[in-house]
Structure formats: C-alpha cells, structure tokens
Length: 104
Image (cartoon, rainbow, N blue to C red; front, side, top):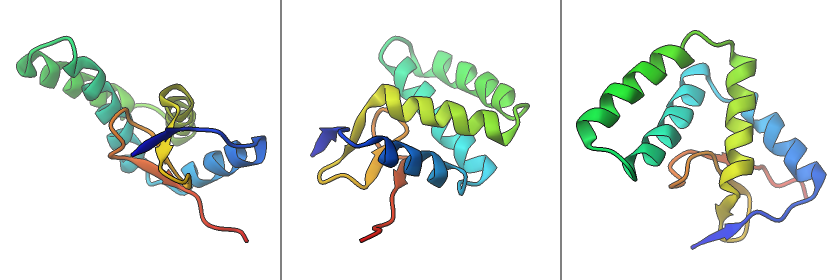
C-alpha cells in the first residue's frame, strides 16, 4: 500500500541528500521510467519506446546535479511513499525509491 508523503522540511532535505548518493545511470533510469509510465497512459508501446529512447539520450547530456533536481521534483510531484514512510517514490509506480536511513 502506498501513502501520500507527509514529512517535515528536514525529511525533504534528507531525501535530497540521499539523491546525491544515487549513481548517474540510476538517476537517468528513474527519471526515464517515470516518463515511460506517464506516456503509457496515452500512447502505444512502439511510440513510447521511441520517445523514451530520445529522452534518455537527452538526459545523458545533463550534469548529475540537474538529474538530482529533476528526480527530487518527481518525488514532490508524485507525492507517494511506501506504507510507513522511509521509501519515497521517484517514478509514478514506485520502482525507483529514495530510502531514508533511520536516524534514531
């Protein structure tokens, strides 16, 4: 089950910090999967694959910091976490998550 995100500003800051630990290709994969999932609602698979391929090519030209900001904005936009928090979805279907480490 998924929940709507409800965390403090410190929690949002922690999500951003965790995104900095993602590898370059992991960010591209998460962002492009979100794009695929969004297009899946409106288009045929053949068209989607062509568009996603072009989108991945474009993402590959961006610096890591820009990819981090895009991924962070997707977490905000999708506004979904696993039941109980600590895993925040980058893509719409929750295949790519930012997992916060317990600080207690």
